[in-house]
Length: 237
Image (cartoon, rainbow, N blue to C red):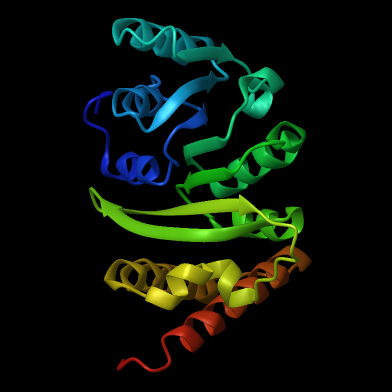
């Protein structure tokens, strides 16, 4: 992967960046996405944020080699602390992290989201945490994608701010409201994989000494399995 040829998942993230956006890419991985967006005219300016010195230096080097130092600012900062008010950020991308970590980055930095029109988020796992954050913080899900790359399945969530109350039920939080409507083959593959794992874990817990934590975990697993069975109730076994 490089700034001219992104991975499949980052290409899909890039597709959701609104034309002319000022983008903050948090955890930028060599600033490949930011460079790609500038080279292709999808963004007008960008900030690439890194929390670790090594990746920060790599991103700076990449931006310099791409001749984009006048368009991309690389900052060493945790999460959304890489964003300054004068940047005028209109889109934030966060890709390649766990959903719980992405949600915590958004929560800790939500004062820096003023003026942001779109969040494009690609969690590696636990997208439910992002959907819950959206419900609690006035962001609606306008698009969701699910894709497979090198036998790994990824979800992408696109959020926009709204003044209306956001409501998602348990199924929508877990599976995604847009993905539930479509239920393509990758969606089915992902959740059937998950169900197999959940059932195996639940079976092991049955033979484990029951503590409060074990009981809670078992209840959560059984709840998710029940939701799964409800979603796929009309399919042949």
